[in-house]
Length: 345
Image 1 (cartoon, helix red, strand yellow):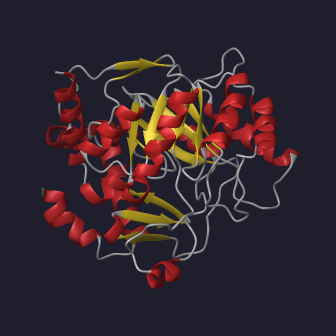
Image 2 (cartoon, one colour):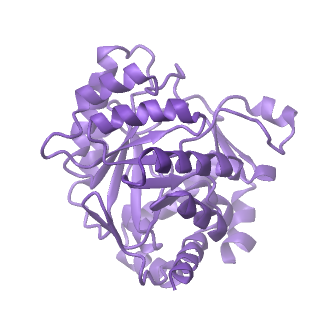
């Protein structure tokens, strides 16, 4: 209530990225202060009773996680834990540091309860970020999301080695690693969702090798079932531990926001309520293709308990939120947990 009546109106008067940086700074300060963590936990961290689950060797006290994108540099995991998240995913991290795309690069579209961003994988680089995460005393699973450095001159074998560098750096600090093959926010606009490109990438990463942390693959929401099935078959051959659905969308179909505003915003990945149904459909397809035998993390438009339950019903085992947090505030975590507990009763 405090967030929606007092904090959100102030944040929404600021540029979307400025507001994000402000929230990130507060969370980073909380991350460094046990006192602030205790205070945040007292306000937001409700019971997890009956929500604990085990997947790919990790114990999740509750199924609600922070999606990659909020904390690219790993400065807030303890703060997120204190808000009641059951797991946290940082990143995307890339082998080389990057300042990302030119500003402005993040935009709210309130009529659609959504965001458009073309941040461009801005992050401090895998070496710095994984060093920051080393020795972190976290009681919830930590995921590390990896992607290719946003540099169009890195391609071919160099692109594979770029991924491998981040993958190796993440191994000692991550509980699981998300291989982000579908990020649209790079200068060249290319992804590894081409079947041959994905096969080449997984051949280099060798996710099934002994000692590797569980690896998940994150798909775009802009995919049809036949293409998804081809990619999953490749992933299954390489021992992928689970799947994440979905990343953002490049489509603008069906939006309430007027076309003039959208044209002014330009390119970028669409997230939030606008992709809610599409991401749920991809979850259903993954559940069908894998016959329910692989864990699925559902992400995309979860901004209410009802949206969360829809994802669970579609086949998601775990959930992630980010854009919904911006529109609804940290209280959303507790609301979803209460709905899940009620459902299990």
